[in-house]
Image 1: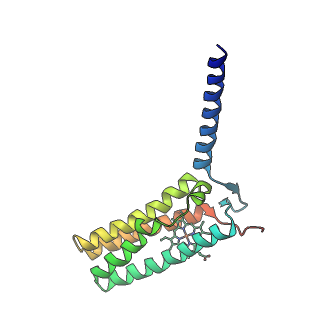
Image 2: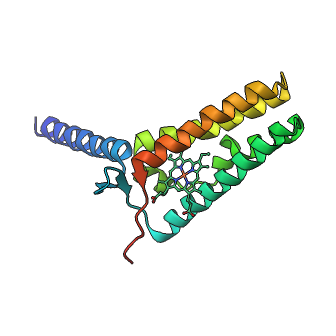
Image 3: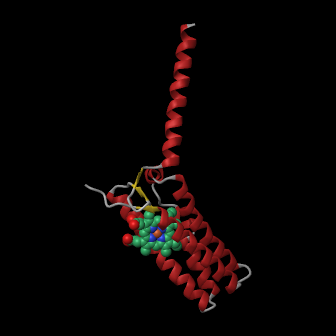
Length: 155
Ligand code: HEC
């Protein structure tokens, strides 16, 4: 009987711990901010990594847009693919824990939309469709910026 009780105790502890982990994964490391956005609290290196990815995003958007205007669909495919899920490989797991689930969804959503543009550029090569996809993709940039910020760490 004693063993059964210990077993239950272990099960309850494990459930509580996994609940804690799931909760952390969903909510991330966040704090409210006075302008209505949510602060995502990262350390200096993590913040620098994300901001560098952001500047690369802007470069990608400009490059893809220009390539569409030039109707150079090979270049559209190349640039959009580079900004797609392929770019996500190097992101450390610890960083993923601190980013709220809704923000992760928008981040990956942006990557997937770049893949979608690359797909259009390789298959139908329809510049109008690619332009519309880029327009829609940029709504995700706007939505995420309206919701989250990355405060400078006090270190
Ligand atoms: C998943 C959320 C998210 C998405 C999607 C996103 N951003 Fe950002 N971006 C942020 C956050 C958060 C910041 C920091 C804003 C702050 O602290 O005020 C930021 C900052 C930036 C910066 C400033 C970088 C710096 O060095 O300060 C640029 C440029 C930028 N984003 C471009 C883009 C572009 C272009 C896209 C779309 C292709 C995009 N972002 C999509 C969340 C996102």
